Image 1 (cartoon, rainbow, N blue to C red):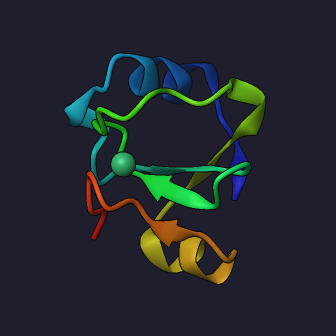
Image 2 (tube, rainbow, N blue to C red):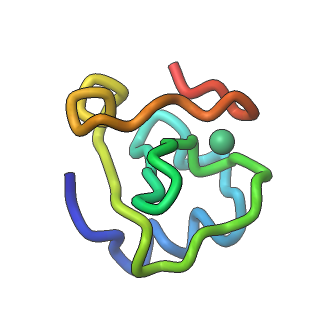
Length: 71
Ligand SMILES: [Zn+2]
């Protein structure tokens, strides 16, 4: 679990599928984690956190987004 880097934040803002599989991001206010390519509304950067895989996100208490279904 880490702060979102500038590079990752840009990937989230652009829904860049090239970053799928590289990192996941969680939204602290909703407890949901997403693939970078998710088309859901972007969170505020201060509420976003990055994970390297689903296990890490699940252990932190986040649940998978129903829209992009990170696996
Ligand atoms: Zn999503």
